[in-house]
Length: 530
RNA sequence: GGGCCGCUAGCUCAGUAGGUAGAGCAACGCCCUUUUAAGGCGUGGGUCAAAGGUUCGAAUCCUUUGCGGCUCACCA
Image (cartoon, chains in turn red, brown):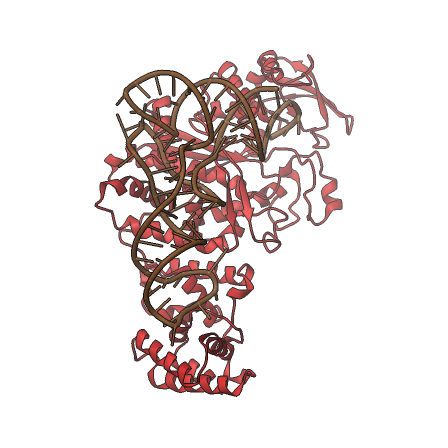
């Protein structure tokens, strides 16, 4: 697709990019923002926000615009409660009400609980082609980088109270201040602001330790803005042009609503273009997921079963404001097949004008699904179902599968391996029992079966020694049926016997292809036992 | 109570710069004596939740209603 056709794309990322340019005007740099609180494991629902922004960033860059893609970690948030499944709860208990950036990391050896959650995500995002500029809120607040923003908020205390009260049931009192304080003696936010002292002084008392003092906005690490005020403050400091938000924010009276007002009236910044994204559900995968990460499914969990392009495809192919489920059951195979289909189509543009429109949409989704540059020619494809069969034959040995196939191009090898790992993980964790098998070995010996069945199996084994792999499949197939007839067997019993001899089950992958893949030597070895 | 989203073929859903309704699965038919929820070819099937409006023309825009879901009014 040439750049001229892009503005006409009806993909939501392109529509949003066009909207940003239209509403914000021509700018040297467009600032696109995303961010969450690392107060727990970052889950796949949080990921929707990140990738939604990234897709819009790409759309803007595809239009030749320069974009700054920032990701704010709100790690000066307070540690409210200890998540389930956390070790060392007694220790963590002593850190409640302190900022999460000061809570120790009991899961790994990062600098803090917040850092643990941050690094866990930061390490995996590049795998799906996402590399934003990270901003750590705790660091900024503690270095007083937001001193002026906090002063502005304090100066407009009455305006902000009015803005927030418009939607509250319990109104903020007259002595409320638009800042929260972490006590400098005990680090807890169990404090009350008691007054201001000049432009930059703020006085507070701590209910936990009794500390009372006056701090200077420009020098203290104690102060931060509450979420609803912090958000618009950051918009103005960073000059944010675009930031989506979850449906919890985008509601009448929600935080986006009040932040818009505060941004305009207090910080003098036109609020960013935004849209609302819906939640992500999980389908299948009962119990086997997220054992390491508590109750939520993380991006890393998803990447164990979906290759990065397919993960991107899931999000790029779904409108942000509609809910969808990530499946771990048999749907996984369907998703891979769907992805492969739009990949094939991408390199095969239809002539029929009626089909062009559909093709363009799918083509754009395919482009946006790529981790890096879009390949210039159709990458090597292997059907995911076939791959699961091959992997089971070779007991998960990916190199063995590669050499069996013999035609995986060097350039596509890494992508192939990633897919193979996903497929193998899926077979082991989620494939239905019917789907799974392991090839028997000669050492396993015979499976008990009636003499007439064993005789037919033996005959097929002899046939395999002579012909398997030499004859076209169709002809081998005919010979196979001849064997069945010679022994006066119904197809059902014959097939069952062969499957029993090969994998110890009544059913298995389509036999003809399966025999071929397993190979002459192994087939004749196993059938030769009868 | 407010807001947002959804309601399209039996099922799951595509279909937003408005222009004669699409896919997959299911069903049905024919073919293949061949099967892990991928055999092949073909066929039928929808008053696009309801009503009204704008328009030459509406699944698509506006209004109202019904049903379903989520969300806000505490914190982030």
